[in-house]
Image (cartoon, rainbow, N blue to C red; front, side):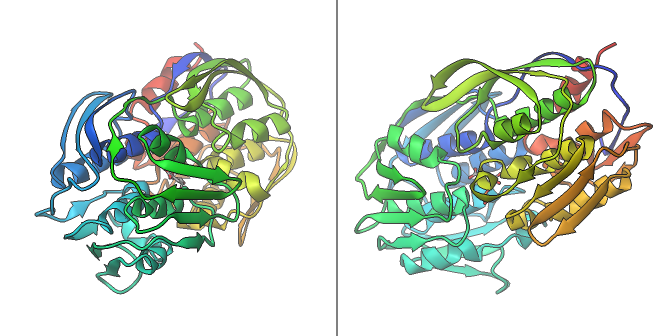
Length: 429
Ligand code: S3P
């Protein structure tokens, strides 16, 4: 499927279970691989990015079997990885690339890493600088601070690192290297990013202390296998939250969604815009906050989205911009320059595509300004093969007049296989 055509929906109704959380699925495979014993994962996200993580650890000598969303990882302990005979290919996955570099920096062998054309443009200096400080020999093969990368791993020196960006990928990379250090390692972020690594590594037996936006790891002898139940991804639920709020006569129940406060910024932002969302059946699953979300059609108004909330909704900003276009008044997204270095430049891809649909939107250095309430019309959407752009514009299409055509529409398989099928299932007839 290269293109898909979407039309206006007059109502959205139904019960949706979103696929497993991408960040948690990656980490379960990675931590299971360097733990002693068998880690059994259920609810695993069977998308292209998480498959890349499995592929890399298979090449590092770990026995992993997958049956849909069930994955079994036969971990070989902190020092059990083998030198890979071939280049490790992370595909489109920034999480695989950045987290694995932390682990490989501490291994007594050489690793070569690469990925697709998008990953080869994404900044790796943000992990190379701290890893070098910790003693790793990590180089960019083309000398441009991007992948392909070569790592000659070895002894790791613990460090105190003030990260210039709030990035869970950077934080996790450093904490993983820090597990192997000669002394504790602390990462301090400008504001707190998602904390799945801290939560899950603790469950695997690591000694991690988190205070505000700082996380400290004490080097350890071993991690121990766990059974992990992966909850649904709030970043995937975000499309249904937005669609259910924007489309008329709609009511969607989204089940089993991760509501960890370091991920749930979309809920506060959507409520602040006037969205009716009930958070039901709150519980804890494998150390993560989980709930069901009941979303109803709402009349939305513009808000400012900026400051420390940004890392808690960074992947949801494209669809929040779409909500802004359908809301009355102005929505301002600021402090979000990180959008430029995601799977595509998301400031450009959101503003170009929303403008093509007739929205009044201006790109800024660190975000965008949307003057909402103008009726949108269908358009040809350039997804840039960015899964989050494809899904955000599928949502935009549901309330636009006329046909919207997404190119490279199958990029949704990176994080949400079955997205279009679920969408057709809840369009009211
Ligand atoms: C992720 C962290 C975020 C997010 C990405 C997944 C993770 O990236 O955008 O989709 O699993 O750690 P940054 O940490 O670079 O912001």
